[in-house]
Image 1 (tube, rainbow, N blue to C red):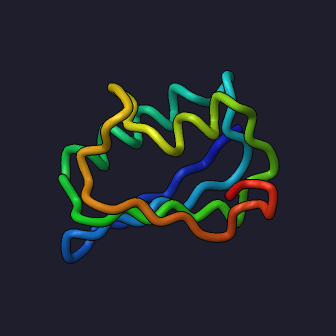
Image 2: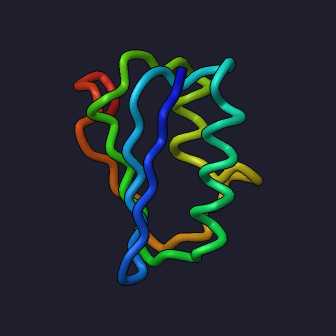
Length: 86
């Protein structure tokens, strides 16, 4: 299960994720990324504080645009990520 909350203001998008991000929940994440991309924010913040699990599919998806490897936003920031994710 994955719950994503998205807030957009002043050309900045903040995504707060709770649950698990992996092969079973990637479709939900991709839908939210499509929404983020439609706003064309200058900055995207992804808050991982509520993540219980993330497999390699989730790590790759959280670092790349759902349509390819080039983000449409200018800067990506991540916060509250696990210490093994650098």
